[in-house]
Length: 178
Image (cartoon, rainbow, N blue to C red; front, side):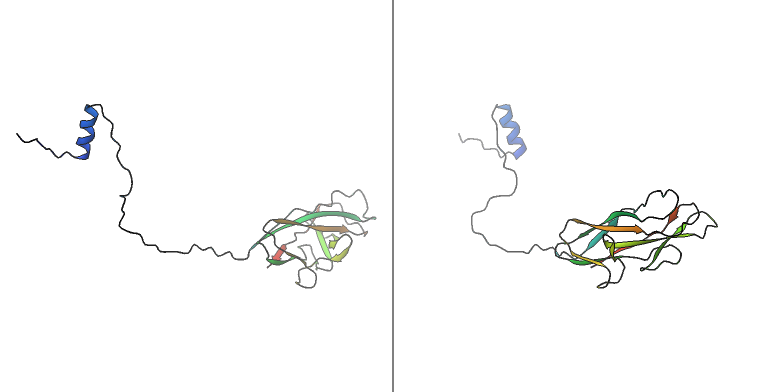
């Protein structure tokens, strides 16, 4: 008598082994071949383009009691984050105060009908070197490191005739050129 051979499917084999109390290991993944190998290299690339991000904190001269007979000096920071080794310049606009120029900046009164102004200066160093918006002339330069770099802005309200009591304001635009 010849032995009976039955071809079972993989699922049938697992079921049969399970009924017999046996365990089976089923290979997972790709088949294994041993007839040879071949290779193909490929490039992985990333192009980094020079970029800079700028932010600025407000400059608040506070509350002046009475007359503007003595200078008010405060400072703030402009933060620049540029890609590593990227050269940059930071410029500051004249501002939005009535009659402002980079050489002579003004804050205007915020109450309707108040045409008064308060003169102020923005400097690159404490009390000197006016900060403007013309590259190579009155901007601050640096080289990016990939991390935020804080640059101090020195503000000054010189002694002057005091206008009417009010809140005075100018909006300065800080620009990073790269």
